[in-house]
Image: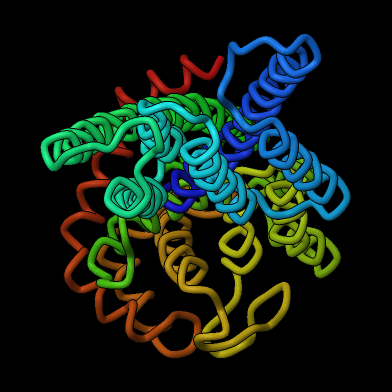
Amino acid sequence: MLELEKKLYNEYFQEHRTKVTTYLFWINAIFLLLSCTWNFLFLVFQLAYSRANFPALLGCLGILFLLGIVNHFVKIPSKINQYFMLAYCAGLITVLYFESGYSESWSFFLLLPLLGGLYGEKRILFYYSFLGLGILSYLSFASPTSLYTPDSIDISNRILVYIILATLSFFVLKTLHIIYMKQVNLVLQSMQITIEEVVNSFIVAVEAKDLYTFGHSERVSMYAVALAKYLPECSKECLEKLRLTGLLHDIGKINIPEAILSKEGKLTDEEYEVIKTHPVVGARMVERIERLQELKDGVLYHHERWDGNGYPTKRKGEDIPLEARILAIADAFDAMTSNRSYRKGLTVDEAFQALEEGKGTQFDPQLIDVLQNVKGEFRNIYQKANDPIKEFESLTDLF
């Protein structure tokens, strides 16, 4: 789930980045269009109500629309586009500083950290805050506006106000991250609930066809997770994936006729070939659901053998995905200890012995070694699953 959380988070911010760039483009466009119109009228009617340089504003507007046309046809990636837009904003603010013609023009630079903060990325905020601070500091000393020459106190106050505003922009950034993280968590929770409902529906559909295997999927899932907990390579995300895969490993049996699933005698060769299709059918089913696609390997390969004599692909050794090798042990243990229409289940000790005998042939030898540490948990799961009262409650809940 961590990968999914990161993916959703990145998707949110990519969409957010695109929106902010689009908004800045149109804000700049509207500002420049109004400024150009305003100053053009002043020039036509010879009204002394502005000190701005009309050609400079017109040039900035032309560059902005040129960027818009290029972006429309070239489709610049959003991450690159944000750099172009912020660089343009920095350039526009610098032009306004020189061409607006009044002493307060330095205050335009206060906009730069705010604009950087709106993107919600620390790196962008720091880059453009320091860029704006550097330009403001340099211009305040080297190129003061013509109407007023600031002294050292004025310049220090400018820098102080700029730093305060940049700090406030950082809190804007943090707030954006909090909002988007809450959205991601909400989506993940909703998605998890939906996945659980889909999985449970599948389980009911499969196990309703064969009451002798009722509870098999849940038990296999618990056995598999219990074993995987002792593997250093299995993270929390890996365990959750294995839990769901265990629940769905036999989903393909929904395509098997009930007459074969509940047959009391030995299966014929033809019937066994039909049974062997369930991993492929199951894999095809889960890959059709976007959020279950990552379970495909466990569903498809859980009947492969370490020696390559399994099905459906006859993979062998470590070519078999780890989750499938774990499920093979969990599935075999539960099958051996469960009663079937054609035989009585083995005892737990007999099942452990059978797993040992399959070490290096049917099962991954390293996992069988790890199993020595998990026998107690397997026994607890078996005992809880075979509580007659709980089993009766589960059956009545099903119907």
